[in-house]
Length: 165
Image 1 (cartoon, rainbow, N blue to C red):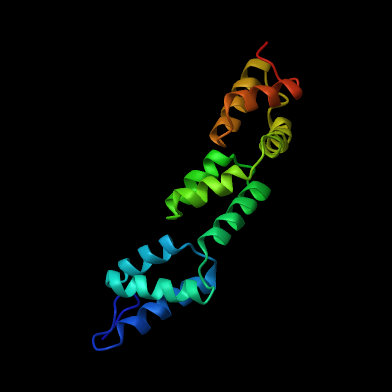
Image 2: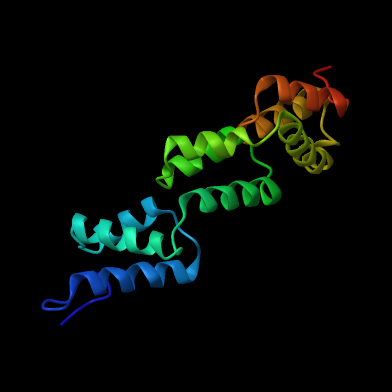
């Protein structure tokens, strides 16, 4: 008698944990922190979870630095979010502060500005028919929600000619 969310009584806990982790990795790459949370939620004891994660890392299935680099590149390319947002997302996925610092530190100010500009150019079409004050407010808010700093947002809006009046 087993369900998909419980561990079978009498089965090898290490093997069960490894199967859960490998199935999760089959869907998409995951950080060790995400896998650890998943294993704990499925009833795997901490020492078994750590042993499985160590073995998976040893075999190259789990690499937090590579995961973080891929996540950062993907989010910049598809969502045009700032390094501040990327850092927060990586933190929530259990990536260590050292790796986050290294990954977000690799994002230059020029890349950050280019991401903000690309997003703003797309968004500008949607606000072009609004009054300047409303367009400015909406653009400023949209860029801020993407995590871009005030100086970057102000520079982007100035380059696009979007002003308050």
